[in-house]
Amino acid sequence: MKHTGFVIAASLLLVATSAAAQAPNDAQIASIVVTANQVDIDAGKLAESTSTNKDVKAFANRMVVDHTGVNKQAVDLVTKLKVTPQDNPTSESLKSGGEQNVANLKSMKGPAFDKAYIDHEVIYHEQVLDAIDKTLIPNAKNQELKALLIKVRPAFVAHLEHAKHIQATFSGKS
Image (cartoon, rainbow, N blue to C red):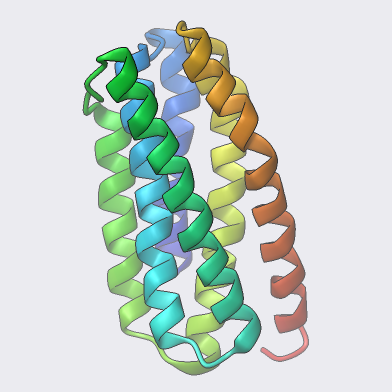
């Protein structure tokens, strides 16, 4: 599991480090945002159907609802702006890492699944926040896109804190 978490973390670090070489444009940022949300939606749906832990199931449901909402806002905005999200190495790497994470999680059950899912969510949200702060917001040229990123940031902070809280409950149960 840790390997998959690092794959996704590396994907998001690519966002931050590639900014120095070539900052993503708004179409690439839109693709990164939609892909990053979809990755968490897919993992959340799996956790909703697989976990038997009520806290993990509730967290997974929150991830599906919140990230679906962010994606709807992002798609509505790019449609309004007539911007087509542009695949890029970061969005493609996120998608691949998300698929690897889901495949890895599908091989687990019970407490091992719950711990792996939550551990991944902590790493993922830390890296998403880093990318939002260091790359996506600073490089968004369209003010409405930048405003959307700023508006949704607190939800990512809340998700991270919630995931850390659940993760702490597992520390004594490993």
